[in-house]
Length: 240
Image 1 (cartoon, rainbow, N blue to C red):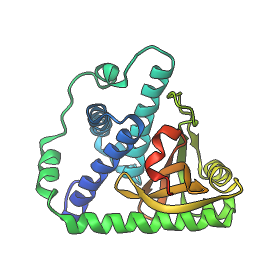
Image 2 (spheres, rainbow, N blue to C red; image 1 turned 90 degrees about the vertical axis):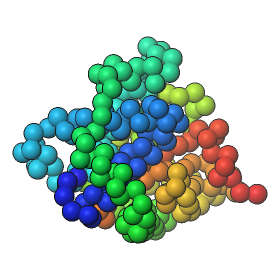
Image 3 (tube, one colour; image 1 turned 45 degrees about the vertical axis):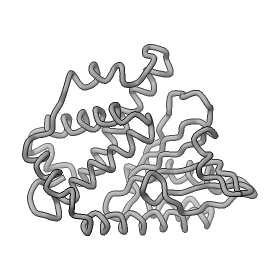
């Protein structure tokens, strides 16, 4: 996440929306999602300049941090220490956190730059379509070529009650996981579709969605795959 230049600021706007979508995907609460994103950025700006400069792909770093916060909250919920994820956000964030003024101003200033955002969405679409094509081969090695080295995959486990999600890290492990889950079931097909306003993957059997994947992208690589198997969340992706 650089902080100067129109293109980098446009990236920042897209980046924040990307993190919000991840948090919304996991919790469904705009308030909780916004606090998760604020905490993610707080941790970014808590780094010194040298530490930030040493992060090769800031978007991937931010995705991992936001995902880690989500997983901490999911674990706390599953263990029964809280009843609602939003009720412990104050303890996670340490209180109300605001983005630096120059960041907030940049987001407001760039909110109307639809052209730049569309270019980013188009890039995202191309990467996800490469992932879909790799999944079609059923070959983990092909899937591996689309993934960042530190990619991760998270699945909700498929139960109707939220359970603690267990992430899998590393391109090789993620490739095996994604290949087994998305291509290892007979009678199913993997299709490209809109997931939370971005291109994602939908796995269907006899027209019924059995899995939906939200994909995080940095540059030309997939950094994270968030897979929902809970049938209650899949109904809108069913086809007659």
